[in-house]
Amino acid sequence: MSSNKKRITPQSQDFSEWYQDVVREADLAEASEVRGCGIVKPYGLKIWELIKAELSKRFEADGVENVYFPIFIPIENLHAEKEHVEGFSPELAVVTHGGGEKLVNELAVRPTSEAAMYPTYAKWIQSYKDLPLRLNQWNNVVRWEKRPRPFLRWSEFLWQEGHTAFATEEEARAEVWKMLGMYRDIYEYMAIPVFMGKKSEKERFAGAVMTTTVEVMVRDGKSIQGATSHYLGTNFAKVFGVKYLGEDGKEHFAHQNSWGFSWRSIGAVIMAHGDDNGLRLPPNIAPIQVIITPIYKEETMGKILAFSRKVQSELTGIRVKIDERDGLTPGFKFNHWEAKGVPIRIEIGDKEASGGELTLFRRDLNVREKMSADNLKVKIEQLLRDIHTNLYNQATEFANTHIHRIESLDEIKDQVGYFEASWCESPESEKLLKEKFSMVSRVLPKKYEDAAPKNKKCFITGGEAKHDWYFAKSY
Image (cartoon, rainbow, N blue to C red):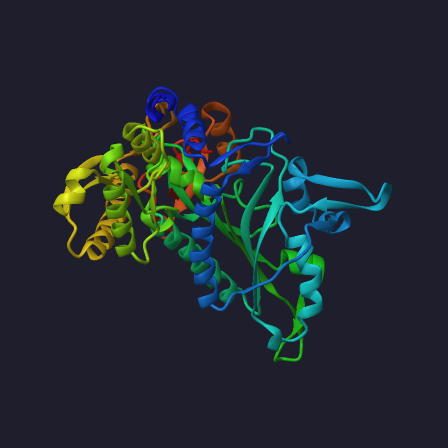
């Protein structure tokens, strides 16, 4: 059997092909018979479930309640918010027939749920006493995708979308940044640093007053939009009648937010941490944190398997598995689990079963080391924490050393990473940048929001610059 190493294209040769290879070799997902959609396999879905469980726990601790609305939206609801529907028109899937008959009122398959939820919010919210309303739903959405890529861009994907309503703009804007902070923290839980801040006018969510984002720099220097949090103002409230009777006895429109995080985060994990051997999973979201690989001949099989099970039994509370598959060489098994990104491999042969000293392989460093079997659980738990920290530090160092300061378009070459530049923030200049270099603004970093630009002149137009932004090609 050939090894996984030979089946994975090196990153330096073709990063896009490398990504597709890793998704396949790690057994995460495959294409479905419906173009643009994917089948997520058990290992890939388990990663998502581990991320989801942690994020859901944090939402609930903050007082957000879960809810569920139908996947179908009356098309007139979408058309009621003109800017919103224009933003999604190219990606919209529309149901025209049902029950064998043409529908009198067509239905859209939700691309996002503002137009599905807010007519009901208008019924639920009557008084200031009904506010704030903070709801979240875990669901699927459909955005017809012309250039599908596993996890990053499928026509159907899983995510969460939070939809909240407040009495005041101040409360709503404060929540925008709080939820964005939760997204930053969940990426840190995945050992990924992010760049956190605002989106440009051209890149903001359709119908929003302000869009904020956490951006992830991946190993080829491109950006992945990790999650977004939007201040919608009263734009949707005015369309759908979301208003309340205030303490002053007057009627007011509610200030609303929406915020979302999807399984494109799995794509970010693959691209931020993976190497030429496959995945390198942070322990927090690894379906298997420790894989035990017994190495035996027929005469030693019983002894080594018994010792392997003893080791497994000691690692309570840790996601651990023994690879007992017959007919496969140790080398094949090693490559298999390396491709799947298991953080720790414990190799148990006759020497380990007899001597009490274990041979460990760390996937983050791709090195073997020896460890005494005494107090094994405590040592493995510490090692998992060390692996998380190391992966986070590696990703942080890569991101921080691949930001290139430029003062003009002429300085854009084939550098790997983000470009930092002083910008006038006009949509026309951003359009020019996209046409010429296939890149757009990714984020106005929070640290630069209240700071004067480093250069008074815009790097695109030469006009007056407003802030320093990060620019990059993206997925």
